[in-house]
Length: 158
Image 1: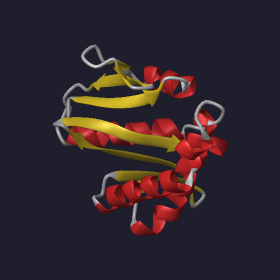
Image 2: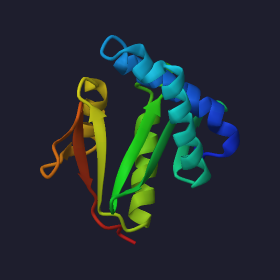
Image 3: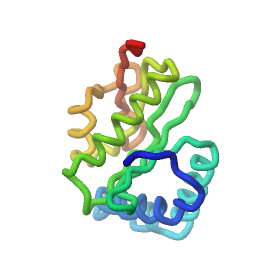
């Protein structure tokens, strides 16, 4: 089930985010950069703001948070800011279900292009996004240690 996040989800969202990020940053960045107290406080505050603005979708499996996604406009362009799946739920369709819900939301809002940044060493995420139609952004191919991808959406058929 996909639903809009509520404030009561914040602890579960922060825990899922922490675990997912640790899987691709571990052994590549200093632990404080993704799991230190300052970083955890910063990301929790960012999730709290996104939840309060209604920009977060949650995927549940058997009443437990299995995935989370947030998107919003930045510099006049829609961005998929985060899409994380509990590593215990990988390869079970949670990410695809969340992605489909994001695309449906964007189309309903008339969005025709979306960007995202994906960590250059996160090959699992890169393969996921490629399978869902994302391509390297020819205008902005990199942002620091991240690749910039773009998804072009056909207008809604409605």
